[in-house]
Image (cartoon, rainbow, N blue to C red; front, side, top):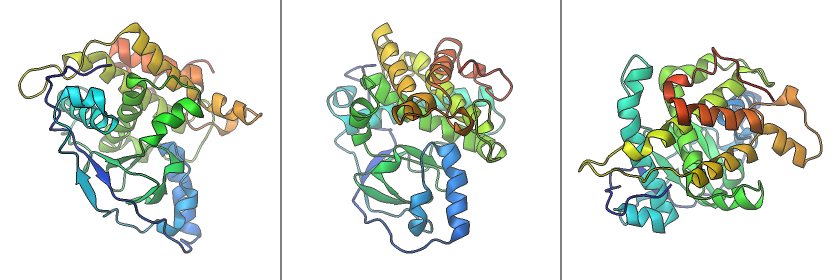
Amino acid sequence: MSFNDGANIGSGKTSRRGRTGVALGGGGALVVIGLFLLSQFLGVDLTGLAGGAGDSGNSASQELDQCKTGADANANVDCLVKGTSAALDVYWVDEYPVLKAGSYHSPAGGVQLFSDSTSTGCGTASSAVGPFYCPADQNIYLDTAFFTELHDRFGASAGSLAQMYVIAHEWGHHIQNLDGVISRANDGDTGPGSNSVRLELQADCYAGAWAGSASTVTDEGGVPFLKPVTETQIKDALSAASAVGDDRIQGASGQVRPETWTHGSSTQRQKWFLAGLYRGATSCDTFAASIGVL
Protein backbone atom coordinates (compact mmCIF):
# COMPACT_ATOMS: atom_id res chain seq x y z
CA MET A 1 0.00 0.00 0.00
CA SER A 2 1.09 3.57 -0.57
CA PHE A 3 0.62 6.50 1.77
CA ASN A 4 -1.09 9.67 0.66
CA ASP A 5 1.75 12.17 0.38
CA GLY A 6 0.01 14.81 2.48
CA ALA A 7 -1.00 12.51 5.34
CA ASN A 8 0.32 13.51 8.77
CA ILE A 9 2.13 10.52 10.30
CA GLY A 10 3.55 12.44 13.25
CA SER A 11 1.38 10.57 15.74
CA GLY A 12 3.00 7.21 14.96
CA LYS A 13 4.59 5.68 18.05
CA THR A 14 7.92 4.52 16.63
CA SER A 15 11.50 5.14 17.69
CA ARG A 16 14.91 3.75 16.83
CA ARG A 17 17.07 2.35 19.59
CA GLY A 18 20.81 2.49 19.87
CA ARG A 19 22.78 -0.74 19.69
CA THR A 20 23.23 -2.75 22.88
CA GLY A 21 25.38 -5.78 23.53
CA VAL A 22 23.80 -9.17 24.11
CA ALA A 23 23.93 -9.91 27.83
CA LEU A 24 26.08 -12.83 28.98
CA GLY A 25 25.57 -15.22 31.86
CA GLY A 26 23.13 -17.90 32.87
CA GLY A 27 19.44 -17.17 33.28
CA GLY A 28 18.56 -20.40 35.08
CA ALA A 29 16.27 -23.24 34.07
CA LEU A 30 13.06 -21.42 34.97
CA VAL A 31 13.99 -18.48 32.76
CA VAL A 32 14.75 -20.79 29.84
CA ILE A 33 11.42 -22.59 30.28
CA GLY A 34 9.57 -19.28 30.50
CA LEU A 35 11.22 -18.01 27.34
CA PHE A 36 10.40 -21.26 25.57
CA LEU A 37 6.71 -20.94 26.40
CA LEU A 38 6.73 -17.29 25.37
CA SER A 39 8.39 -18.26 22.08
CA GLN A 40 5.42 -20.47 21.22
CA PHE A 41 3.19 -17.44 21.06
CA LEU A 42 5.46 -14.65 19.90
CA GLY A 43 6.63 -16.47 16.81
CA VAL A 44 10.31 -16.24 17.66
CA ASP A 45 12.79 -18.46 19.44
CA LEU A 46 13.74 -16.57 22.57
CA THR A 47 15.32 -19.49 24.44
CA GLY A 48 18.81 -18.32 23.57
CA LEU A 49 18.18 -15.00 25.30
CA ALA A 50 18.08 -16.28 28.88
CA GLY A 51 21.12 -14.26 29.85
CA GLY A 52 19.21 -11.02 29.34
CA ALA A 53 15.85 -12.12 30.63
CA GLY A 54 15.92 -9.68 33.49
CA ASP A 55 16.57 -6.64 31.32
CA SER A 56 14.12 -3.80 31.74
CA GLY A 57 14.29 -2.65 28.12
CA ASN A 58 15.58 0.86 28.85
CA SER A 59 17.89 1.21 25.83
CA ALA A 60 18.37 4.77 24.61
CA SER A 61 16.05 5.59 21.73
CA GLN A 62 15.63 8.37 19.22
CA GLU A 63 12.27 9.65 18.07
CA LEU A 64 11.84 9.70 14.30
CA ASP A 65 11.13 13.41 14.07
CA GLN A 66 12.19 13.46 10.44
CA CYS A 67 9.16 11.31 9.56
CA LYS A 68 6.30 13.75 9.19
CA THR A 69 4.26 12.98 6.09
CA GLY A 70 3.04 10.16 3.92
CA ALA A 71 5.62 11.20 1.35
CA ASP A 72 8.31 10.48 3.95
CA ALA A 73 6.74 7.06 4.60
CA ASN A 74 6.79 6.25 0.89
CA ALA A 75 10.48 7.17 0.66
CA ASN A 76 12.00 5.73 3.84
CA VAL A 77 11.48 2.40 5.62
CA ASP A 78 11.73 3.83 9.14
CA CYS A 79 9.08 6.39 8.21
CA LEU A 80 6.95 3.62 6.68
CA VAL A 81 6.96 1.89 10.06
CA LYS A 82 6.02 5.13 11.81
CA GLY A 83 3.22 5.82 9.33
CA THR A 84 1.90 2.28 9.71
CA SER A 85 1.95 2.70 13.50
CA ALA A 86 -0.08 5.89 13.21
CA ALA A 87 -2.67 4.27 10.95
CA LEU A 88 -2.91 1.13 13.12
CA ASP A 89 -3.40 3.15 16.28
CA VAL A 90 -6.26 5.19 14.85
CA TYR A 91 -7.89 2.06 13.40
CA TRP A 92 -7.83 0.17 16.71
CA VAL A 93 -9.12 3.14 18.72
CA ASP A 94 -12.38 2.72 16.79
CA GLU A 95 -12.31 -1.03 16.20
CA TYR A 96 -11.35 -2.36 19.61
CA PRO A 97 -14.63 -1.38 21.35
CA VAL A 98 -16.52 -3.26 18.63
CA LEU A 99 -14.65 -6.46 19.49
CA LYS A 100 -13.97 -6.32 23.20
CA ALA A 101 -15.15 -4.94 26.49
CA GLY A 102 -12.80 -2.41 28.00
CA SER A 103 -10.67 0.36 26.60
CA TYR A 104 -7.90 0.30 24.04
CA HIS A 105 -4.45 1.74 24.47
CA SER A 106 -1.59 1.52 22.01
CA PRO A 107 1.61 -0.46 22.66
CA ALA A 108 3.54 1.37 25.38
CA GLY A 109 6.40 2.46 23.15
CA GLY A 110 4.81 1.54 19.85
CA VAL A 111 7.34 -0.05 17.51
CA GLN A 112 10.93 -0.09 18.68
CA LEU A 113 13.35 -0.30 15.76
CA PHE A 114 16.83 -1.64 16.40
CA SER A 115 19.89 -3.08 14.70
CA ASP A 116 21.85 -6.14 15.82
CA SER A 117 20.48 -6.38 19.40
CA THR A 118 18.45 -4.58 22.04
CA SER A 119 17.19 -5.08 25.58
CA THR A 120 13.48 -5.73 26.08
CA GLY A 121 11.10 -6.67 28.86
CA CYS A 122 11.33 -10.24 27.53
CA GLY A 123 15.12 -10.38 27.52
CA THR A 124 17.96 -9.20 25.33
CA ALA A 125 16.97 -9.78 21.72
CA SER A 126 19.15 -10.12 18.65
CA SER A 127 18.08 -9.54 15.08
CA ALA A 128 18.00 -13.31 14.61
CA VAL A 129 14.75 -13.64 16.56
CA GLY A 130 12.79 -11.65 13.97
CA PRO A 131 9.97 -9.19 14.71
CA PHE A 132 8.06 -9.85 17.92
CA TYR A 133 5.67 -8.41 20.48
CA CYS A 134 6.71 -8.51 24.12
CA PRO A 135 3.71 -8.72 26.50
CA ALA A 136 5.89 -7.83 29.49
CA ASP A 137 6.58 -4.28 28.29
CA GLN A 138 3.86 -4.04 25.60
CA ASN A 139 6.29 -3.07 22.86
CA ILE A 140 6.83 -4.33 19.33
CA TYR A 141 10.46 -4.94 18.34
CA LEU A 142 11.68 -4.92 14.77
CA ASP A 143 14.98 -4.85 12.95
CA THR A 144 13.98 -3.49 9.55
CA ALA A 145 16.68 -5.68 8.00
CA PHE A 146 14.04 -8.40 8.41
CA PHE A 147 12.24 -6.99 5.38
CA THR A 148 15.27 -7.84 3.27
CA GLU A 149 15.44 -11.25 4.91
CA LEU A 150 11.76 -11.78 4.12
CA HIS A 151 12.72 -11.59 0.45
CA ASP A 152 16.17 -13.17 0.47
CA ARG A 153 15.65 -15.98 2.98
CA PHE A 154 11.93 -16.68 2.86
CA GLY A 155 11.28 -15.90 -0.79
CA ALA A 156 8.50 -13.35 -0.28
CA SER A 157 8.15 -10.38 -2.60
CA ALA A 158 8.44 -8.06 0.46
CA GLY A 159 6.76 -4.98 -1.00
CA SER A 160 5.15 -2.24 1.06
CA LEU A 161 2.02 -4.14 2.14
CA ALA A 162 4.11 -7.18 3.05
CA GLN A 163 6.14 -4.93 5.32
CA MET A 164 3.00 -3.39 6.82
CA TYR A 165 1.55 -6.88 7.31
CA VAL A 166 4.48 -7.76 9.58
CA ILE A 167 3.82 -4.69 11.75
CA ALA A 168 0.05 -5.16 11.75
CA HIS A 169 0.44 -8.82 12.76
CA GLU A 170 2.53 -7.86 15.80
CA TRP A 171 0.04 -5.10 16.65
CA GLY A 172 -2.59 -7.84 16.56
CA HIS A 173 -0.70 -9.61 19.35
CA HIS A 174 -1.03 -6.41 21.39
CA ILE A 175 -4.80 -6.54 20.91
CA GLN A 176 -4.75 -10.14 22.12
CA ASN A 177 -2.66 -9.15 25.14
CA LEU A 178 -5.10 -6.40 26.11
CA ASP A 179 -7.94 -8.91 26.07
CA GLY A 180 -6.00 -11.61 27.93
CA VAL A 181 -6.03 -13.99 24.96
CA ILE A 182 -2.28 -14.61 25.09
CA SER A 183 -2.33 -15.74 28.70
CA ARG A 184 -5.47 -17.85 28.22
CA ALA A 185 -3.98 -19.57 25.18
CA ASN A 186 -0.70 -20.37 26.93
CA ASP A 187 -1.10 -24.14 27.31
CA GLY A 188 2.19 -25.18 25.69
CA ASP A 189 0.43 -27.27 23.03
CA THR A 190 1.56 -27.37 19.40
CA GLY A 191 0.14 -28.66 16.13
CA PRO A 192 -2.15 -27.46 13.32
CA GLY A 193 -5.18 -27.01 15.58
CA SER A 194 -3.36 -25.86 18.73
CA ASN A 195 -4.03 -22.66 20.61
CA SER A 196 -0.61 -21.35 19.62
CA VAL A 197 -1.53 -21.67 15.94
CA ARG A 198 -4.96 -20.15 16.57
CA LEU A 199 -3.27 -17.21 18.28
CA GLU A 200 -1.02 -16.55 15.28
CA LEU A 201 -3.83 -16.95 12.76
CA GLN A 202 -5.95 -14.46 14.68
CA ALA A 203 -3.10 -11.95 14.51
CA ASP A 204 -2.93 -12.57 10.74
CA CYS A 205 -6.68 -11.95 10.54
CA TYR A 206 -6.37 -8.71 12.50
CA ALA A 207 -3.63 -7.61 10.11
CA GLY A 208 -5.92 -8.31 7.17
CA ALA A 209 -8.81 -6.45 8.81
CA TRP A 210 -6.65 -3.37 9.19
CA ALA A 211 -5.42 -3.59 5.59
CA GLY A 212 -8.99 -3.82 4.35
CA SER A 213 -9.99 -0.64 6.19
CA ALA A 214 -6.70 1.25 6.10
CA SER A 215 -7.64 3.60 3.25
CA THR A 216 -10.61 4.88 5.32
CA VAL A 217 -8.51 5.63 8.40
CA THR A 218 -7.67 9.33 8.56
CA ASP A 219 -5.16 11.55 10.30
CA GLU A 220 -6.23 14.35 12.64
CA GLY A 221 -6.87 16.59 9.63
CA GLY A 222 -9.17 14.10 7.91
CA VAL A 223 -6.66 12.97 5.28
CA PRO A 224 -6.62 9.19 4.73
CA PHE A 225 -3.26 7.75 5.71
CA LEU A 226 -3.22 5.25 2.86
CA LYS A 227 -4.43 4.83 -0.68
CA PRO A 228 -6.83 1.94 -1.45
CA VAL A 229 -5.17 -1.46 -1.57
CA THR A 230 -4.61 -3.02 -4.99
CA GLU A 231 -4.78 -6.66 -6.04
CA THR A 232 -1.04 -6.64 -6.63
CA GLN A 233 -0.44 -5.43 -3.09
CA ILE A 234 -2.77 -8.10 -1.69
CA LYS A 235 -0.76 -10.74 -3.52
CA ASP A 236 2.35 -9.20 -1.99
CA ALA A 237 0.98 -9.58 1.54
CA LEU A 238 -0.15 -13.13 0.79
CA SER A 239 3.36 -13.91 -0.41
CA ALA A 240 4.69 -12.82 3.00
CA ALA A 241 2.04 -14.81 4.88
CA SER A 242 2.86 -17.91 2.85
CA ALA A 243 6.61 -17.47 3.30
CA VAL A 244 6.38 -17.67 7.09
CA GLY A 245 4.05 -20.69 7.23
CA ASP A 246 5.36 -23.53 9.39
CA ASP A 247 5.25 -26.00 6.51
CA ARG A 248 7.19 -23.66 4.23
CA ILE A 249 9.88 -22.97 6.81
CA GLN A 250 10.22 -26.61 7.85
CA GLY A 251 10.15 -27.78 4.25
CA ALA A 252 13.24 -25.69 3.52
CA SER A 253 15.04 -27.82 6.12
CA GLY A 254 13.82 -31.05 4.56
CA GLN A 255 11.26 -32.30 7.10
CA VAL A 256 7.73 -31.06 7.72
CA ARG A 257 6.41 -32.02 11.18
CA PRO A 258 2.86 -30.67 11.68
CA GLU A 259 2.76 -31.83 15.30
CA THR A 260 5.37 -29.16 16.16
CA TRP A 261 3.65 -26.23 14.44
CA THR A 262 3.12 -23.02 16.38
CA HIS A 263 2.09 -20.61 13.60
CA GLY A 264 0.08 -22.52 11.01
CA SER A 265 0.60 -23.60 7.44
CA SER A 266 1.06 -21.21 4.54
CA THR A 267 -2.51 -21.96 3.44
CA GLN A 268 -3.93 -21.27 6.89
CA ARG A 269 -2.07 -17.99 7.23
CA GLN A 270 -3.22 -16.77 3.83
CA LYS A 271 -6.81 -17.86 4.56
CA TRP A 272 -7.04 -15.88 7.77
CA PHE A 273 -5.38 -12.76 6.37
CA LEU A 274 -8.02 -12.79 3.63
CA ALA A 275 -10.81 -13.43 6.16
CA GLY A 276 -9.89 -10.23 7.94
CA LEU A 277 -9.31 -8.31 4.71
CA TYR A 278 -12.76 -9.05 3.28
CA ARG A 279 -14.88 -9.57 6.41
CA GLY A 280 -13.29 -7.38 9.05
CA ALA A 281 -12.00 -7.92 12.58
CA THR A 282 -15.27 -9.41 13.83
CA SER A 283 -14.54 -12.46 11.66
CA CYS A 284 -11.29 -13.19 13.49
CA ASP A 285 -12.37 -15.51 16.30
CA THR A 286 -10.03 -18.33 15.38
CA PHE A 287 -10.62 -19.98 18.75
CA ALA A 288 -14.26 -20.67 17.95
CA ALA A 289 -13.93 -21.40 14.22
CA SER A 290 -12.55 -24.19 12.11
CA ILE A 291 -9.14 -22.81 11.19
CA GLY A 292 -8.92 -24.54 7.84
CA VAL A 293 -6.97 -27.05 5.83
CA LEU A 294 -3.24 -27.49 6.11
